[in-house]
Image 1 (cartoon, rainbow, N blue to C red):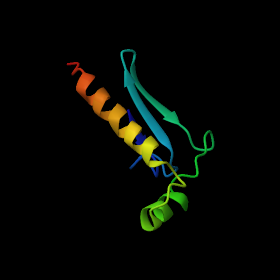
Image 2: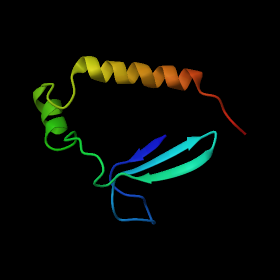
Image 3: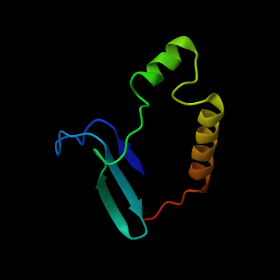
Image 4: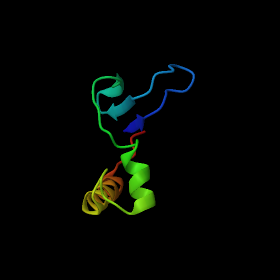
Length: 79
């Protein structure tokens, strides 16, 4: 799964694209205007600079990282 927050290079100047590949094929989902999370501005940079947890708690960030590592470890290459 790939999320392009800003734009889909050479195809669309609008941001918020989700690319999903599963056993049924490749899927492109335009998410612009469909969802909204105030993560990047201004909460995330502020958290980095001020060591606060307004955008995401440290516990949440560690859980997300753990789930990424588990998913990577269980991933299968399909050729």
